[in-house]
Length: 253
Image 1 (spheres, rainbow, N blue to C red):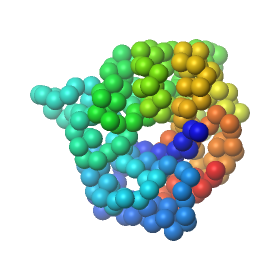
Image 2: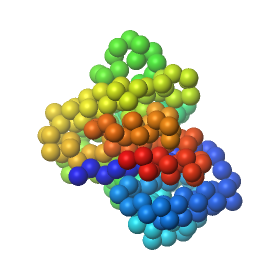
Image 3: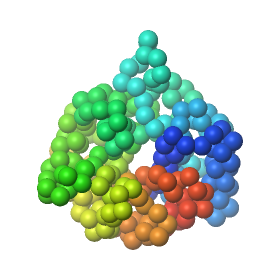
């Protein structure tokens, strides 16, 4: 049975004190409200990883991840952080290929393929992001475009390794633009991606892979989105910075 996962991407936000406060609130709400069937992953900026990990402690179902990792193991790469270093601080997940990394830092499918492998080699669970721009969506080529991202970055993995990867579909055109993707549009793309995975690895393998929705999920649209059969959770941006909103999304299953 696929994991239900709600992952919070803090992006470049929150001071140490603010991050500690947010983490404490989320962990306490998760415990107090007796949530047990949804995996929560907090993905703060790098300096927060260890203090967040300490606050999570041994709370079942709550984990910490990074927002990126290097494609190198070690060496003279000032400002980079390797998967090995991330894992050594107790992180369990890492976001790879977020639309902002692709756009602002020009990360391509080849580079992301290497990063996924580095994450897996170091025992991290990659949350691999894929998605399309407004231009591609309006051209009607979104499905083959996003499928190609999976093919080019992930399809040289073994069946065993692909099952360790979490996919996050981001309709970039619906993030902070005022446009919205409907739950049916989300389901359509998630189904297409699962079918694409199944064509390569078989239906049984594809059925085990969690596919998250990363298109401005909020408490007021989470229930409808998460009710769709191929939407296994969310990669949450802005709403992950507010403990009540974030937990309300977690409880929307």
